[in-house]
Length: 318
Ligand SMILES: C[S@@+](CC[C@H](N)C(=O)[O-])C[C@H]1O[C@@H](n2cnc3c(N)ncnc32)[C@H](O)[C@@H]1O
Image (cartoon, rainbow, N blue to C red; front, side):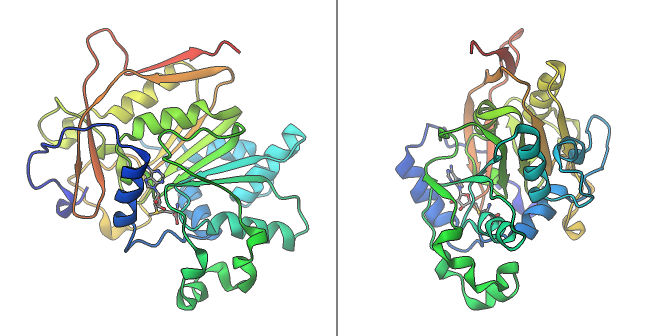
C-alpha cells in the first residue's frame, strides 16, 4: 500500500458487527465521490489482466476461468458464462457483489442480445440502490455505454439490496465477482467465505481490485515490516489449497505508477474454484477495523489459538 494510504495512528476503534442500515449509511458516504459504473469491458480487464502471472506461491488466475470458457480465445466473462452453460446444460448464474450501478451486467445483456445469445441469470447485490440514469452523458460516452439503450430497464439484472457480507442468494451462483469492492469491507474473510459457500458445484469466485488488498487484511498481533509479515489471506489460500481447492492469484498491477517496491503487493486478483460439497468456516474474529481517509478498510484479525486453523474446509451434509 502506498504511504498516503497507511494508517496515521494506531487503530483504536473496536469492531462490532454493523447493521444493514449502518452499512448502507457508511457506503452512501464512502461512494459519493466514487464511480461504481464500471462496464463489462472494465470487468473483463479487472478479471483477466495478466492472467498468467505466476509468482512464488501464487498461481495464474486465468487457468481456472479458462478451463470453464467456451473455448473461444478471448478471455472474457461472456465466454466463461457460455462455457458453463454448455457444460451444465442450463443458463449460468452470475452474481456480482457490490455491483454499483450494474453496468457490467447491463452490458452483458446487451452483448447477448446483439449476438442473439441466451442471457445468463444475473444477480446484482449492493447496499445502495443506485440509479443508472444519474450517470452523466460525458461518462456514458467514454464507456461501452455508447449504447444509449443500456439504461432500458429490460437490461437490468435482478437486484438484491443487502450487505454483501451476509446476503443469501436465491440460487447458488456459477460465478461470483467482487470488483473494486473488497477494500470497503469490514470483514473480507467472512465475506469471501460466505461467497464460497454460495457457489454452485465447480463455481468460481473472483475478487479483484487495483488495490493490493491482500496486505490490507492483517493479523493484529503482527509487527515489523510488511515484507516479513504473514497475512490472513495467505493462510486462507494455503488452507483451501491443502484441502484440494484450486486458488489462483495474480499481483499484476494495471496501474504500474502506483507500484511501491517497498511493499509486498501480493494480491490483486484472486480466483477460487468451489470444491463440490464443501464449505469453509473462518476461525477468527476481528479485533478492529481501521478506515483511512479514502474510506478503505484495514481489518485486523485475531490470530487463532494454537492448533486452530484460520480456515476450515469441511464436507457439507447435503
Ligand atoms: C467502488 S464501487 C464498485 C462498483 C462496481 N463493482 C464497479 O466496479 O463499478 C463499490 C460498491 O460496493 C458497494 N458496497 C461496499 N460495501 C458493501 C457492503 N458491505 N454491502 C453491500 N454493498 C457494498 C458500494 O455500495 C458500491 O456500490
